[in-house]
Length: 229
Image 1 (cartoon, rainbow, N blue to C red):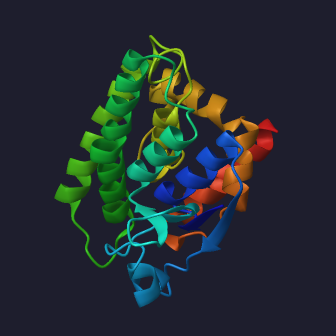
Image 2: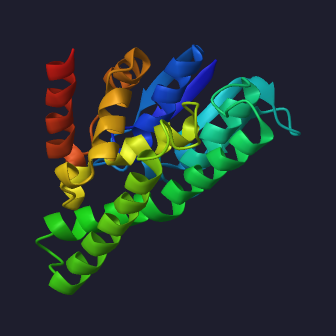
């Protein structure tokens, strides 16, 4: 059994989605981010960085005889894909492309979208310079995805993989980073195709306790999902 400590944020939805795609039993432990559940001592034993998501694999023991824990969403995605031999493509080249686009999200899309959303919604720390900086960089990164998806069905090539799940989890909230999806038709079509996957619906629906910071984007995305159902 995989125990998933998470909340309904861009990083938080990745793990339930991948587990649904894999068909692996799991249990969600919802984290109330507003109440700082992620900073409690019990959770810091699982993730010393105090961030979601994190998992406990009750089927695997570490060298100390404890259930294996994994934190950082990219590391969790890779751990699960490797453990269950799925969502990594079929060849060594496929796997290499998966890692490229997985780390593209981890090092680019996630941080830039997060900062753009923060300064776009912040009344306490308003900064037009910062907002412009992160908006422009977010748009540039989406243009990179647009170029890739204009030539390939999926980010790693011919196969749907954890790279798609990782990037989708943030592109689902693109509007909160001031991204006009009409400007990126290949990305928009790719996002819609992922949203129509039953495993994606189930993973998102099972994720509880939405983070207020992304509440509006969650609602608009839910409306898109219902419209396509």
